[in-house]
Length: 311
Image (cartoon, rainbow, N blue to C red):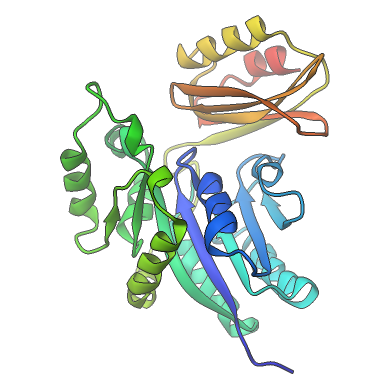
């Protein structure tokens, strides 16, 4: 029996930062020819990100909880099952965007003691146009994701404009939390993801140090920013004008402060994939096959109003 260990690669980041997009880039460019499995932890009772990955990909979803305590056993068991049943070369771990990176790292170290796995790389995806806003609006877990990551990968750099903070200011604020980690500022379209993986591997010497601050176990979502997640199954077909009106209402905070909303909305001619990230939205036609579903994540959410709209 081979004593080769399965690599674990953590792709962390806040809600809507672009984790799944980066994972898809890795699968298409850096990990071709490898047998890769995905382990996801999402807020809400319905998984969305798994449907955004290649259909042939093995995905294990852990829903509606934080990894560090309530789901720790499920998380380690998920790794064990993927290793024994699927026998991958690597497992990409995509934690919930509203959780502590330190807790994910610690659980991976626990998994190393129970399964033939090795924590190889850790990176945090940070939405460049929104980082300064999120530093003010979110709890310590957001700073934790930046503070304890050996590599910071900025997303949406190409969307920085006259109304956005300068890139130098963004880097300066990140440096206050993490003085040493490389900050990758390139537009993803202009680089191969092997560059990111190479940087992550070079920064891997910091992985062991990242697990040290485990004594203070801050993990409850309500304590760290008060985030809530509501999940909906959508059976009736929508019209585009209704969907656009709903997006405007999200932006106007008619349902509370929505940081992230995502899902697949049914229309008479098929599905549209909706991505909403704190005021910015994208609606595109999708060849998704399944039932309509939608997840809303934020603070002070009005369940009744959301349910009346998304029933």
